[in-house]
Length: 177
Image (cartoon, rainbow, N blue to C red; front, side):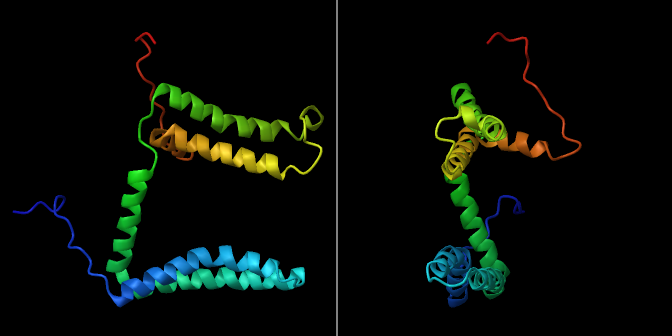
């Protein structure tokens, strides 16, 4: 008797439907990143830019659904499994060292505190008199870097914040550090 958990599905043979679906999927995901800045640089009125950007975004959503329909269930499952394999291979590890965890926690918390305090203490921060976009971008980059450094276990802790019945478990505190 074959164990269904151990059996691997047969490899999907690439066909024109899969190729077209992947191309349409890539177009729907990357298209707005190209089309919207291009529309902005054409010198059109802001109302027309906003309208055309909306059309581009709706078109991207429709083509995303179309890509899945063209690929079919087996093609969609194939692409989803390949992306999941890639993310597992290059994603953050489940457990990280204590030093990496502390550095990641600092990277995660500092932008949050800075963003919370800056509106009240703007006069104390050098270079905060001008545009704050660079502070925001640096804080976002630092926060995302912290999330990657914290590892997969932290994602579970963060997710547990939004689950009503989640309980925290603490390691045994009787062992010396």
